[in-house]
Length: 149
Image (cartoon, rainbow, N blue to C red; front, side):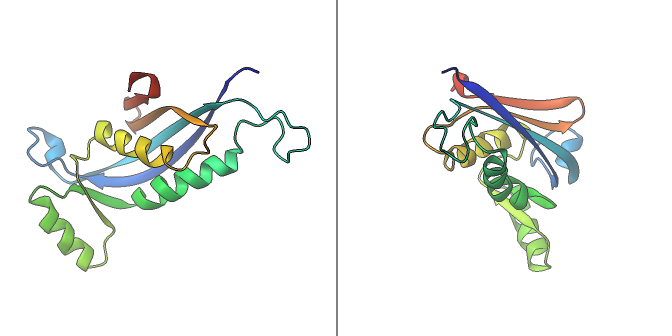
């Protein structure tokens, strides 16, 4: 049976700042992120299986991505914990703000690597992560492909 790719799209709002950057993104700002998650596998051939004909139930994929990515990053501000922004982040968190302190510079490129690791950890054994596309704006995005790793 042929391998089939399944894609589900997600969106979330998040803010960040790039410490040490030489442009506008050094300032705290936000994006309306769009994330496309593509997995690959073979459709279930067992006619008695409740998910016969599916590679993965879109709902199952949604649950993974929503739990690990969207619910965590939506309406959060993301700072690199290894920069002075960490202190600002802790102060904001103490006031009730949703702050994520990550161990990387929160660029789209680094976020997508983080997302790939998180999603891969929860996929069923017979399903592989094929690619991710993270749009930061309507015209700017980062892509991750398993074949490039």
